[in-house]
Image 1 (cartoon, rainbow, N blue to C red):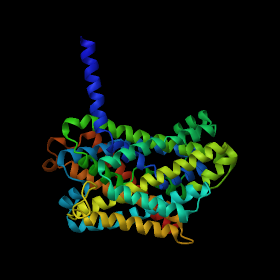
Image 2: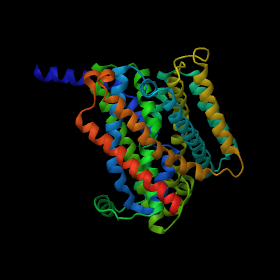
Image 3: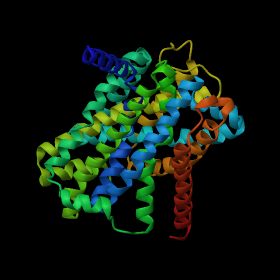
Image 4: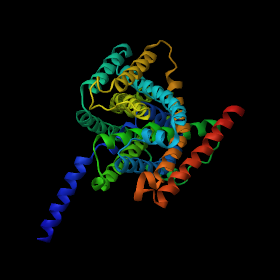
Length: 415
């Protein structure tokens, strides 16, 4: 009888988790976008296994930060942008969001660059692939609802695991990976600092915090489902880091070993063919395409949502165009501008990709500090303010990022 009761309780818990499933996994999966794949690919090809250590602290920080977003959304019923405006004022919010909008336009441009690159690796012109992909993205958002889009996004998330297969086909050196994770080479040059900042910026991107919190609200999650939401967050964070790990491993065990230099993810897909076989190259290209489409949908949605929320406009996929015109116009403009840049002959796509990730790394401590101040206010969070562990991880991360930004700016001037 006791076993039956436990079984029923476990089954009920699984059903609740499945009903909650979405925000954490989708946010984590979208983080492995074209910009992220490019950054991880270049990192693996340039520094080999020695750059893998950055993913260990990134996993811990990602779980802690995303849990904060979920908790703030559930407790307050408000998005992060709304809370920043209420607590920091309109002027501060305006300047923060100017930076975020510019970064997210760069990020969305990077996603369509990923579409172009993956299709070119498969022999399809970007002038055909990019407009068709953009039209599909636009129709999914304009005609769909949050519930229907979420199902599509969860399916897309599964495709990212293809990078595990691509890495294994490259026959990685597991003992060397273990040694590199425990005792990475110590270095302190400008290019390495930029790469570490880029990895941090793409693994824990500023826009993720806004999207995570808004998706918790759109899904209507409440405190009684909080522990299941945390599980969703943890699973999403693990997916993010596992995929990043295998992308780096795929490029480190093939391109870095052979001394092959790359500048973008498309180069990695093409270079893998003679080194790890046609299957590895095709899988890498397909993963890049799916990730790019996935993120080209989410990023403009997230940007439009938090900008509208910050300045009091209606927002959300469950509203039609007449109810939330600013939301849909902003989403459409971001997509159109990003596509236009990609289709320009000679557009500096590699620079846009790398520097959009670096800008993410620079903006992240600003967003993180805003979050930490708000989540520790009892008048906002009541008894659900941060525990000491969350504050230690959060403030330590913000301080380390600020120090890295200072080093980056100093090196930029005197390099």
